Amino acid sequence: MKHIATAFTGVVVLLAPLAVLAADTASRDLTFTKDVAPIFQKSCQSCHHPGTSAPMSFITYQDVRPWARSIKERVMRREMPPWHLDKTVGIREFKNDISLSDQEIDTIVRWIDGGAKQGDPKDMPPPLTFRSEDEWFIGKPDLVVTFDKEQVMYAKGPDWWIDKFGETGLTEDRWIKAMQVKPGNAKIVHHAVTSQIPPEGADLSSVFGGELNEYAVGKYGDTFPEGTGRLLKAGSRIRFDMHYFAIGEEQRDKTSIAFIFYPKGYVPKNQVQVLNFRNLPNDELEIPANSTVRHDGYFRLPRPARIDIFQPHMHMRGRGMTLESLNLDNTRTVISSVDHFDFNWHISYIYKDDVAPLLPAGTVLHAIAIHDNTAANRRNPDPNMWAGYGERSVDDMLQLRLHIVYLDEAEYQRLAAERNAKITATATTGNQQP
Ligand code: HEC
Image 1 (cartoon, protein in one colour):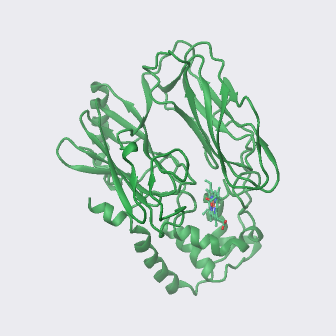
Image 2 (tube, rainbow, N blue to C red):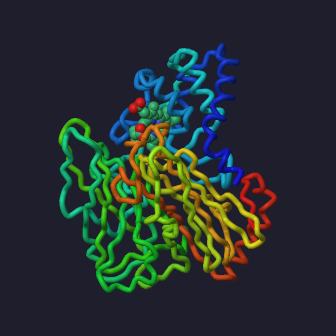
Image 3 (cartoon, protein in one colour):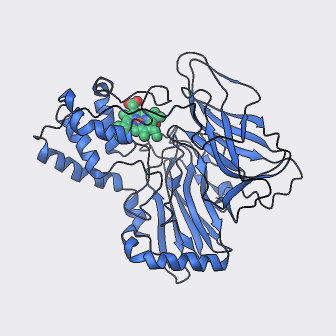
């Protein structure tokens, strides 16, 4: 468990070399237009542009300059862009990686330390155009489901978590190829998590977990690989688990989810299951006052499997979560570790196809969760209070949500052989397969 010891001190270790570097080269003049604007275009503006729920726009120098100090802090702590993995362990390649490289962080920090100069406007890269939030990024939907009742959000007050409902009106089961949640009012929707509630008495043998898709700023829906899907049951309702924030004037919202289905009668070969790591002892979650605690969960794979997505879920005391495999040859492999969890963000880490963990039957998945109930945790609502499992955000949780595809033995053998053939090329990812 060596990596755990380093994983949670990683931030401290990381800042030191950057500071040294900054001091060394601070004399070189970095400018916004030449050095920083390209990084902001690539890594910040997809969210920080007008019309999204990100609280400020980072397009022009004038937009950015007043935020310089806060930007420095957020990028050095690796809180922005939101990507909370320990990048030094486990799998390194993700389809949705929006993180900054060490080099980019260094450039931003040196630019700010050097006075955050604008530079020559002629160096400015041409402005980006943004996809309209009105578009469905997955393509033209077959079905759109929205709330029965519009939500009215107050002008001033704390964040509001509320469940809303809508009907699918589906009269037969359908296999989902793609789905996307879109906020009705992006200014106030922080995130929206959807799940299906099948009608009572429905045969749930192929449903595998109710959670569907999630919206958070910067997310553009799920499209499953060809031949892979999820089942939406006839007569299902959709639950929208909404997180709103107040922006100073009353607002209204009707968030929706869109689906693209496989043709009627087509059953995809592989079904994506949402494995919510239920074996983590939810009801035993014990977080005494002024303490940092660890909980462990285990899940033995009944069949060979591929893990496509890793997503820890905790609340305000959540600090980190690690997934490792306990392999059949008695070795263990760290798969992924979030070391600076932030409850504001529900990030799905989507593995690239070539590195998505491919595990034989009998492998044990081991999840390690760390909750920090001390005053050192800035988000902690009250370090003097015991916390346990609960839905409210002042209570806590621990869940590891994985998208997992079970494979038959022959397909597993085939994919493992393909992977082994490539293994020399991917040795640098640090993901050794048994
Ligand atoms: C995926 C969307 C997304 C991306 C990408 C993103 N941000 Fe943010 N950012 C947000 C949202 C939403 C908030 C407000 C909520 C929060 O603080 O977490 C925010 C808040 C911030 C803040 C805090 C401002 C304050 O209140 O002091 C800073 C600074 C910031 N972002 C900088 C950046 C920078 C710099 C980048 C790129 C290197 C970036 N962000 C990329 C969505 C994003």
